[in-house]
Image (cartoon, rainbow, N blue to C red; front, side, top):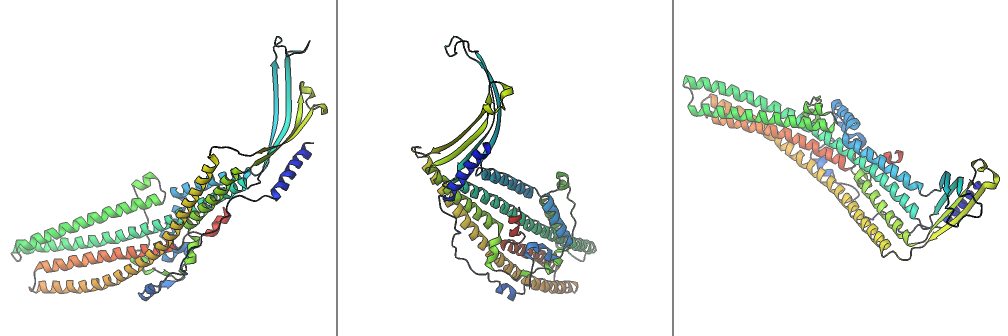
Amino acid sequence: MLRSTFTMSILAASLALAGCSSVGPDYQRPNLETPGSFNAAPLASQGNAASAVDLLAWWRSFQDPVLNSLLDEANANNQDLALAAARIQEARATATGTNSNRYPVLDATLSGTKNRTSENAGKLGLGANPVAKDFQLGLNASYEVDFWGKLSRADEAAKARLLAQQANRGLVQSTLYASLTQSYFALRAYDAQLELAQSSLGTRQENLRLQQKRYAAGSVGELDLHVAESETAAAEITVAQARQALANAESALTVLLGRSPTAIANPDLLRGSSIGALYQQLNLPTDLSSDLLNRRPDIIAAEQALVAANADVGQAKALYFPSVKLTTGIGYESRVFRDLLDPASLLWNVGANLVQPIFRAGAIGALVSGAEARKDQAMAQYLQAVQGAFRDVHDALNNVSANQQVYLAGNRRVTALKDSLRLAELRYKNGYSSYLEVLNAQRDLQQTEAALVETQRAHLSALVSLYKAVGGGWDKSSLASK
């Protein structure tokens, strides 16, 4: 009997659902005007090497095993990724719970009660026992018929939010890869800067030693000695600043790697290719079509948030319409426990409940208005994400171009300053110029070489930003497997 009653309820719900349609607008992607591709021709004309870079693993194009291993370590231990993964699990649980509302609910019940009725209340028949027992065993089922799509819209919204969280993890991952790679480039640049600063300090110390000897011999005046002392002190300051920047870069990198507090307090990082060797591996990706932006995780997350907000509007509007709930139950009831399963103790029920809101003092309208406002917010955030994506690509291309020009000019300046230093030293040795001219030439060369290292770092960092801007480092197909 239970089976037939329950089957009738499900059949009735299925037949009702066959003619149902969801209330509210179906989602349609906003129609945006976007360019077909990005213009990278000026970069190629400036001497930037172009090659077919695997955007899903763009970091491997730098051919540095140490960098690859650091990224693997960060992928396993970074706490931002762990947080994003936990949010996915929460969203998945929410989606599962929301989807369960679309199915019947079946509960088993077993109860026993004992009560005594007052003999002076006039409620008992003549000779009736004032103490009564009641035992019940049964199954109860209920099912809400989703006539207007309230439950299906809720399910649609929950699934969209799950996809958004998965895409957000992709954003965290691609951002982590870009940030860690850029931090590694900064680390190797600071290593080179420290090496230049120490070399310059060694030169200044040797100059000071020679000037002290010459001053003692009366060959130079006090001015030349004090200038040499000043330049040596300035070089010591530069070395201290380079060490400070290097130490800070190491601690920042260990945090991205997800290492322990002890490891952060005492960084121990392997070094791979030098900044110069990394710069030689700089390659501009050949595929810069704007379609690549379709796999940017932040745009996908923003669009799924818009999908969810759109479904929320339909879910809210469905509250204006009647809700129908089917119920059924079957079981046994007896005053004596041993007679509980006797066929004569059988009971069952079938019911339907319809509720039509009449007056809610504007509560439903407020819910609809709130849902529509949140949809407008989601739309604005989606458009901002798209606008930001195109700006990211534009700015990254611009930065790559600018740094390329700066690097070429810096190289020419280093060559010229080396010749100037050689001539200044020759003039000083032959007595045609003062020692100050040599110091100025040395200072200019050291500063330009340091600036050239910084340009290499900035150029590499801009290229990484370009890889990230076109959606590199994350596979959109991973959404379907989670």
